[in-house]
Image (tube, rainbow, N blue to C red; front, side):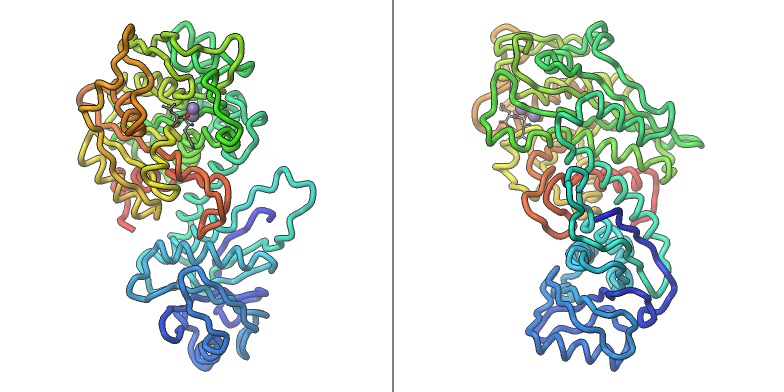
Amino acid sequence: MPGLEIGSSTDAAQDATADVLIMGAWGGASPSIATTVGDPIDATLEAQLVKVGFKAKTGETCLLPAPEGISATGVLIVGLGSRDAADAATVRKAAGASVRRASSFTHAASLLHSLPVEGAAEAAAEGTALGGYSFDAYRSKQSDRTLTAVTFVGGDDPSIGRAMAFAGAVKLARDLINEPPSSLTPKALAAAAEAACPPGSVKVKQVDELQRDGFGGIVGVGQGSSEPPCLIMISYAPAGEARGRVALVGKGITFDSGGLSLKDAKGMETMKTDMSGAAAVIGVMSALPALELPIAVDAFIPAAENMPSGTAIKPGDVITQYGGRTTEVLNTDAEGRLVLADAIALAAESKPDAIIDVATLTGSIVVALGKKITGLFANDDPLRDALLEAARRAGEPLWAMPIFEEYRKDLESEIADQKNIGTRYGGSIIGALFLSEFVPQGVPWAHLDIAGTARAETDSDESPKGGTGVATRTLLHWLRTLSGGGDN
Ligand code: BES
Ligand code: MN
Ligand code: ZN
């Protein structure tokens, strides 16, 4: 689909000059129109829905010819499930499902923003923008999707603008994730950050500087590849006085072959996705100038390609991480923690109010929580609670996991300060414990393990198959709340 244009208009729904009008229906014994436009139109539609046996489960859709009095050609009804259970997440899902169903039209009008649900306008706009996303850069034939515009009719809502800013950040993240790995190298990731953020806000440490300054993790992981690694740093500072200063860190492994501890073919298929943490952080940073949040944010993105070669790091090698701690690398496929350790140590130097890292870190978190829940590890209760709340607002399921101290001894090395793997079990906790070594006492820190959620294997709700851009909106909601932003 060419870029989907999303706007709003004060035209009445009945008069919308679109070829399809998207409306919502509550589920139950017989579905009822939730985006009412008044009888006889509502009653006619309800009668038709009963006739075709439509149950109005969340995201279920039904296309009907428009009844008398509606100028659009068709009406697309999307189910919202039970009225009592409906919340902003329901609206977001329904909007995502309906925009995909409407893809063979040209111009859709939508009433989903007017649903009597808290935060409906923002959720409808977000769900529409995100559900309508597709990545077609590498198709030789135009896809058969023709939808170019969705207009929310029957009134303007200021939160639609914010939703579009958030959705824009997610779309950027998805584009970066979906880009093939030989095209999205560390260098290209840095260029993408520069293109998406204001001039002068991005600084890139190249490999010679990284070597000189002791970033042994980033240099070590990158040394097996002909694409040099780099450290991308992005800064946002508000125009006025900042109410706080936080650091974001994103894992930017642009391809993870496992290195000499090589993955099998299946395991490598989706490993262009291993920079999804970086993509989320770049997405967030790209949106901050327009949102004008009164908080300073520094982003640190260690970017590298993890490849096997004659120059690659070997199991048994010892590297010196930024700040001086040494790591015995026993498995070169546990590379994310090596690059993140350097970046976290650097981020901590200026004692930010909080550090949050986002990383496709472990297969183990996918075993624990599956493909739809992100794992959260935090050393600070208020930060954990704030992130859980931000994730709830964003509709991005997040679950708190333990940083279980007794497992720390699993990381003891025979010859260095720690090794980079533990025993077979509890791998996501071991990963978090490893990272925690680089967070100084007293600095609130959270780690989001998005290995399961960074990529969707099927179209669902507001996430089409492919890179999801997960964590982008959770972080934006968190930053907005930190800044004292509104509560919806
Ligand atoms: N990038 C992977 C984690 C991953 C797995 C992301 C599946 C997305 C889907 C990471 O670098 C990795 O390989 N982790 C190893 C660590 C192990 C060697 C300790 C893993 O989880 O198997
Ligand atoms: Mn790996
Ligand atoms: Zn990895």
